[in-house]
Length: 179
Figure 1 (cartoon, rainbow, N blue to C red):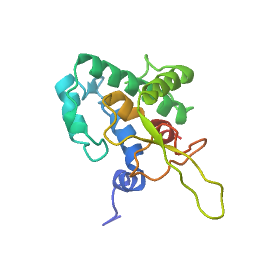
Figure 2 (figure 1 turned 60 degrees about the vertical axis):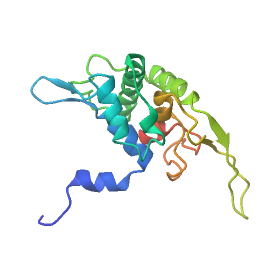
Figure 3 (figure 1 turned 135 degrees about the vertical axis):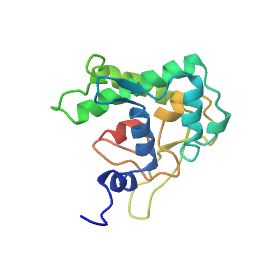
């Protein structure tokens, strides 16, 4: 089909910024098809570069100087997200990058929720004339100093409300990305 955009380009244009962030994190480790697994998060400097490249989705990202503990926490979050993505596409088997390390869904959700709970949030009253007011919680602007919490936390104020089964404006961004 001449002139048609590749499927991956259409996908990039059709998902929210928060879902893109979760997908980008999940894709920082992958099987290369020749038996090798490539991990883009090779150290704190690689994580810092990845965060700086997503400054539009991570407000205040430039102030984060990840250390080894932060790298470990982000990798743990990535492991949880990969387990949830794998669960979302079941019954297909886990890919080679995950074959021996997938977490159970309850453990993956526990890790994600613990990270998301560290994001400071504030209530934001919303609604219209025909419905009851809603009080979703949004991240405090520039209030998160914990990079893992920022990655796992509530949707950014600039993103549309999450969609999917069980998703609300207060649902951690990464959970709705896997719905």
